[in-house]
Amino acid sequence: MTTTIGSVTLDHDMIFADEYEYTQVNASVEDTIGGGIYVQEFQRSESGRPITLESTETQGLQLKSTVDSIRALADIANATYALSIVSNNQSVSKTVRFRQELDRGPVEFQPFHPRDGLHSDTIYYKGRIHLMVI
Image 1 (cartoon, rainbow, N blue to C red):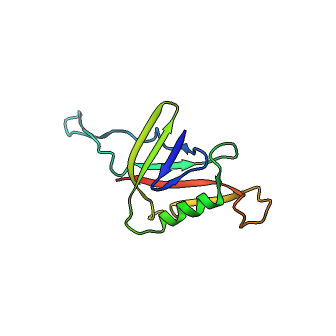
Image 2: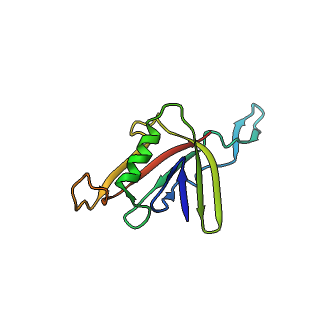
Image 3: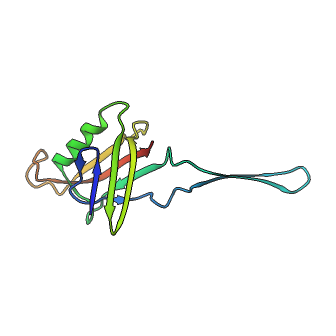
């Protein structure tokens, strides 16, 4: 099981938190003057789909060096990256960008039980990576 963003391979697979919160069909329903309804449905492009990778206390923790590498990718304006998730005989490959437009930023991590000081490379971090399919 491997997850890679650009040139960075995550230490442990993170959870694709919003994998099933996106629909491929966009629809609108409006009432008509005669009392009926008018329905429009369209097949949606995957462009703009959010992808949130999330870690918990038991899955997806990342070393500080990996978090620093992810932050370095996120700090490049207008950049896109290949995202590859291979897990449980499934493979996801997308071109993504970091979601800079979020108030909290595209990369949020907090130290998980720091023992060797906050700047040690042996500290694990839990958090989220916010991406968008291009």
